[in-house]
Length: 62
Image (tube, rainbow, N blue to C red):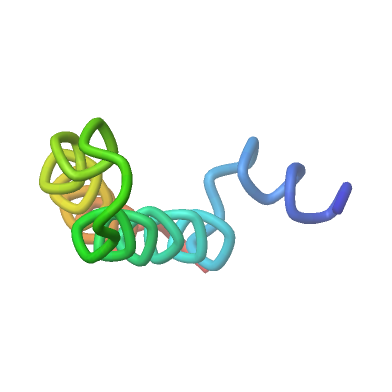
């Protein structure tokens, strides 16, 4: 866990891509769940942030 946080703080690609992928997956899950309207409301925003974040961090160094 400490290595993951260090890689986030040093702007390493692997850790940030993982975080962006988790945001994308969370947004899709929020979109597909039928129980909580607030999650459905913000699902597109979370997915969009994850996608833009993935595009940006794909330019970070290894």
